[in-house]
Length: 501
Ligand code: NAD
Image (cartoon, rainbow, N blue to C red; front, side, top):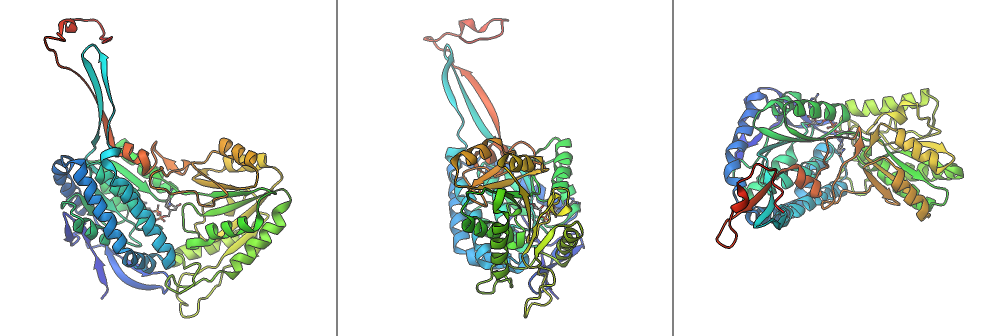
């Protein structure tokens, strides 16, 4: 009998009322390692009510005290980084060093959130009128919900809850049911850091739990990260219910390589960003746009780097890349490789049929590279979310920019060039939210925001950075006058629109 991952409500583990469960699989071995409870409406209601009950006291807690709890949480995550990384590797499949990198990026948001006394300051102006001062406050919203994807089980929840909680909100997290364990460990660390019970809660589940969160009247704001169709659904449903929403969706990230680029550097960077984490990153490069004559040399270099990558279980020393998340997803990615061949792209490197010795039941697919891909092909249009790179050839930078701008997604992109002018033109004209110049995965830095454009983000505000603070607070503007003998309120009686001047 495998262990059951239960919920975290009001500072303790809670057994689900719903009898539904799902298997949690180690993608490297194909074995079920535990089961996870799938919450229903009653389970979600219990978590949201716990968060609602904790809100008055937590939002009234001075920002300095909230900040100190965040600082302790950051230290605890640092202390337990190996343990968290092992949980990620076991349930997600990414390599251990990659999982450690994810934990690091997550704790940087906790570190950012510990600056909340400064971040949550409003503005003040004196004498906006005679004897009248004006100031603004950034106040917490109430119960906030986070719904997160499988590909970053620590980092993506950390994009949300530390900023929300530091600003005085309480939180219910619904992590991916595919790798639920790391979020439970984060909840325990929150408690150890001194976070009062009920401020951070975790409910596991699928669409049933998500729908219950979207419909719950006590939930004031929803942060979502996942695929585009679900992001759109979450955005529309929650907004219809009057909630604040930020919903980050899928991606098709292009790397544009100019003829003057350092090709060895570009090929290394692109292979790492395309095949790292088996291509299951929302900032993974999946389309390479070769400009001018460099196409043949670039393809040959990426192919030889990809062919040399060690594909193995995430804990194997020296592994460059692990398995995909599930058998169904591996088969879907392999199906895209079949379609690419059928649609006439040139298959340069084929990762199908890869078997890893000792892990024959794992969900592996090796680095795959297509050349001469056309923008009408499904391997170019769709987010594959696997280790498949598609090279599209164009003649000029203008054509490259037009191609990227025509794509439905706008999460990340990068240009590789030695020309400041080309880089500047690219930054100005590209319709994408996060842009790298000779940097394949530009971001995430906790003190900047993270988010895409077009079908990669529904809503107005990105996660973390000051946009995260804006998302999790609402502004109140206060105009005040204190009449006195020196400053009598003689002009207050008037039916004229006040101009204060
Ligand atoms: P997903 O959309 O399948 O799931 C995301 C979350 O939504 C999970 O918690 C899941 O339980 C829930 N969910 C799934 N189906 C649902 C439904 N029908 N109704 C309501 N909720 C549902 O995404 P995933 O496969 O876990 O993650 C991969 C996707 O996430 C990729 O598309 C990737 O690009 C995207 N992603 C985007 C970013 C970003 O910053 N834009 C970051 C990470 C991942």
